[in-house]
Length: 409
Ligand code: GLV
Ligand code: MN
Ligand code: MN
Image (cartoon, rainbow, N blue to C red):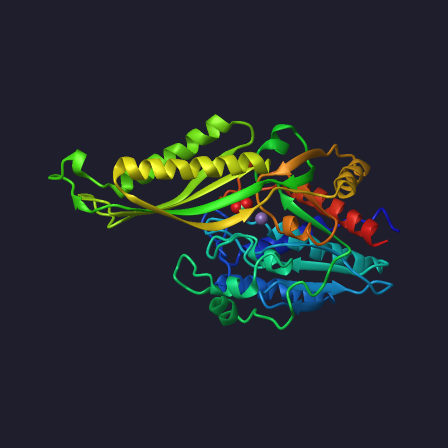
């Protein structure tokens, strides 16, 4: 095995830049919500690159796109990849880095004339963000048999469009059955999306797993009324009840402590008029914990609070589950391999649990899986200012290259 091979950092950055032009936003980030025209353009660009690099490209029925490079022997491939959809105010690196770095690995091996024993594969999974169609990590969830394809097709997005229709409309509903290719191993390079590596002056995170994630949509129904004439004691104010719920979510994180996080990322009032008491509020609650038992406790306490506030404020509260994944722990030899290879390149890797959801957490149910993290400047992600220094992108991609070579040798 050639161990001195290095990726071409300039080319990696150039491709990220080119992809980032699609759905580009003022300030540097981009918006490529799943199954939109911008997503299609991104997919066309990346699958075009896959074909130029000689990969055999297959698209499955949920739009997951996998390019395979033959090995010296037939067999299950060593797969890498991530996603190229973004949130509406996304950065250029979240997901994109893992896919583009995979292409860079392939291009360097092509240039060096190296064929690994096992095949290699680079994938981009559909709708990882779940920002338009819930749940998140949808493509890899269907791929690993944890979400029914027909159920995914029927999901109605935040814009009222139907997931399956939109997938077909952009021409990425392929013929292959999701899960058609079972990898020998999966490794994903991703930005940390948080502040830890930067704060500790480190370049590489050896991810040991992904925390559990619970998303719920909460609908509060009250009675709209005149803002000037309705005495406070007679109101059934959906907006006020929603605000109490948001405050409770923050309080819950304080009470549970540890790694508990909680976010109300969306709250909409109807009719949404200055002088009208809201009769309806729709909001989302995102709570996460690396410990499944604590996450279940957080969910139970949230639901108990919803019952309490409904009675106290005379409103009706209903809930809809949007996404739920359990914490996942990666195979120890994959975690160790990231640390070892980082060490070979002169980096001290820090073991860390991912706060964000990733396709790797689904792939971990199919095969030994690992993840490499690189730092996010100021810990920012899901923000147009998301940035990772080119040298750190390159370091992560070099570790990915070495790890894929080792796994496929
Ligand atoms: C996906 O980006 C998530 O919300 O963790
Ligand atoms: Mn991501
Ligand atoms: Mn993301």
